[in-house]
Image (tube, rainbow, N blue to C red):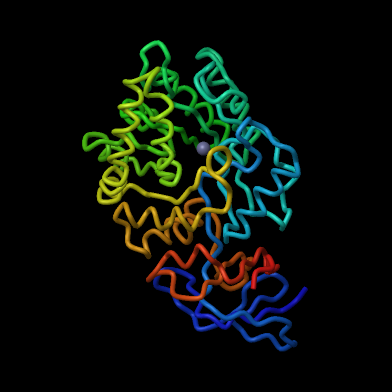
Length: 361
Ligand SMILES: [Zn+2]
């Protein structure tokens, strides 16, 4: 395998800057190798980005072909994402395990939703009596996470509503924990936050319904929130298509959209751990993590904090190392200091996956 000289600087952490480093046999070293150098890359080096809410293997109509799942992963990797926390996928992507053409994927099995309370063909749909058993099943199918759909439009009330009772959420979360998996849930509605947090959940996706009353609870329990702001930006089109048939729901979604930056700002100020995720897979195309980092700055995170939410902090949260001596060279190279202008992450100069260059110039 080739030896690469990373001429740096290398940002091993937000405040841990090293002048230069080398990649030997796919791994980082800070001792100059004695052999010849095959490639030299100039620029600011950071650990590969993390897309903490991404659906490799999910398309607009549910499962996709193996070729399409591979293409999803390739687009994510080209954008600098070397680690994905999958947030539920109807296709089995286990065949991509250890495939260096795509990011490392931490799978969550299939989404678990209430019968007819989610997009058709996306999820395993269950009635309450089967929820906990399904949580155990998906926990065993995934890589340490499962994904619940905690609220969705209730066509009878014409508004968002919880899909299960607090007791049922609690039982599902306990079942997954016993099977060794952490639990996250899709939640738009205000009413989902408290039952999920008190039920012992580990993460909340979107979390548009956090309020001044519940944000302290989320912070106290250190529940990880992945806002997926580039996806929330699509609420306006949901509102437009729902306005006539479900006016209350449409107004509700509009209000959540209107205060999306305040909600995330409030969570940030309260000390809620925030992570960058795109929700690529159905409405959102893959490879847009750089845009999500910029969105997080609009919600009041500094450029360094936004970067950390999709880089150093996210890797640590998921149990992955960075660019320390001897670790895999999963890295991205950008032309300027990304702590000053995180927008530079939208155009990586190079991406390395275990020291293998993804082929950008
Ligand atoms: Zn999603």
